[in-house]
Length: 335
Length: 275
Image 1: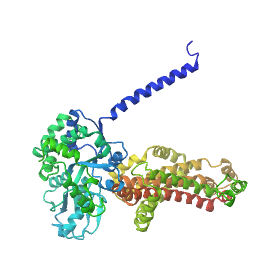
Image 2: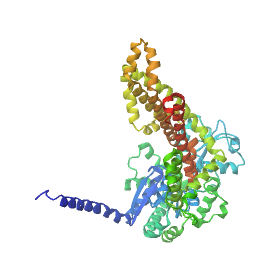
Image 3: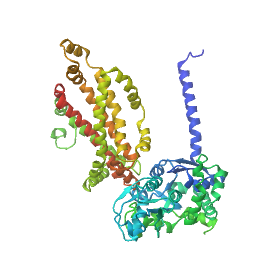
Image 4: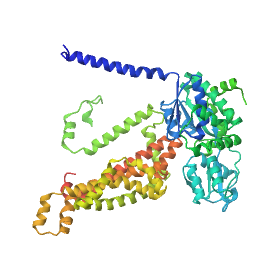
């Protein structure tokens, strides 16, 4: 009786296969609705703690969020364009202008704050950098745009611009003396002050206000998941306002939500100073950007080479959708 | 062509005997190659026009971007930058690789010492070693040359080694019976008989070197071709990005193909008729 009929064998195997497939597909389908998949183009480190806190708080309010960490912002943008992620983190202005994908920015999370640093043995102010070599992150990067804008504002022109990716690498090169003028992030500047006090100085930076990290998503997704996006936006506003008012609260957030638990101790020590500096220089906007932020970005990213055309002729509606932010601000109040 | 159209209507009809004869009688390798290329470009164009993905430019746009980059000189200067570490790396790999490979084939001691290292190097995913190279050698030219060498060397060494090992034993025995010295045996029998495999190894080594240089320029510091790819990706010039990637693929294919032709015409008289 057993094993006598090969057909029934095949039928049973087919049934088992169908059941397995059905079982494995069913939960995937269920998960697809009401879930936010975020593509983050960096590893979770000190700078991301505010963002991660807001995500945890949105999760507490019932939003299912899945976050994946990718190698670079470009790849995160590709994931959003290709539909493998719903929300991306970065400033994809070039992508928005050139690719015409139905993607819009809806929240400005942080602004670009960098420190143009010179070795005081050689240079004292912007005028000294005329015709001299400087180092920036990469071609078309934010650091290059900042240095170009500041050269223009100070009426100078650099000699050679070399590309050294990674703020920590440029910081190291300054300390070793391989580079005499470059631009580093706040962690880099703190390290320079600690390792060689008085040897380096920051040149004045004025009138640069552009997004460093913004959240963007497919417009279909924003329409479909209005509620989840509203909750996330509100929590982002609340979290960053708390951080601006009391930067040391980030350490509590990290413990409470067990964020980035495997950070090495010297990095953990950097959390306090990083968020204090951030609050002092206004790294995190209190109102999530919006129209004014978009216009500042147009000017900056045109210089950076990401946007083409006259900044004044660019339309905010082609790059931003203001609805989620406006609604969230109505709920939590404007500051 | 007129035979392919039904008289008076101008409508195409099925293949006529003359068309079949045309196919059967001559060597149409070039025709089929061009047709396959045209089909590929056509499929790309269609995929780009649909579009399959917002970031996929059609073939026509990519080709225009390629022409634009040739005209403004950015592609040529990128190749000038990329070729330096590539050529240095490949020359080093070829010289050391052939020498070590032949030695390994001739001397058991060298074989025992070196074979495991190169077998492991060939089997290991060497791209994973590139971050390690930057730790030791920094971000300059040395690292890039090393990245090329690390990928190209094992292929060349192992091919040479196997080539020498597989030399026809009766030829070696003949040399001995003619009282040839050891040196004559190597120079007149072993190397010539092993040369087809040695050349195959060199070709494979060069294509591995191309992989190495592109990896290095994407993973170490963006210069040359790697800079063009990363820059155009970061400013969403996808047509330029695709054109750069396609150009390096074509360039490496043409280089390797050209090398094969050179080998046949210079060193392989017996194959000239067939090729």
